[in-house]
Image (tube, rainbow, N blue to C red; front, top):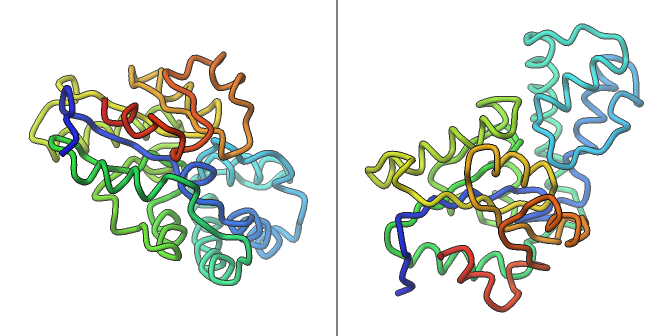
Length: 230
């Protein structure tokens, strides 16, 4: 069984880190905006590292619509309805190299809590992971419905993971696994380590310069699992 130096909370991002959805999320979001605002240009900006609620609020502002919490909630409700169909029909959908072995190794490790740290709202995370059978791998998480700010949702996930281990967060090593500079920034903001992967398209040098603790091409890279487990 792999040895862990200290109790560890692992928080995995989803899009670009665990899976590629072939654009299913963006298509569902665009369709939701078209249906509720009549505009198809609301979200012509990069989503990488953004939370679902922040994406919706920014899109509403872009087209001059009310961006209050009620309006955000209405659009997210429709987005989730559309997301199921988009995920089902997406032709380019899959798990990135090394993800399953990394999750297997973490599941065997003692004093390790495996969770999500994602900008997706909880229901969206479930939809995206269910298609590839990964939804049952994560017993907790920090989600886009916890907070629009990525650092705060990671903080929530870290606290939940520590609680599952019967510890305070300060007693745990927290490791965020992500693919964007926003993942790196948010992890560092809560004092976590960052394993940054290049599967989402960001240059490894950029992730390294941003301050990621470790940078790997993907989780299949030799030594990547050891970095996760300490």
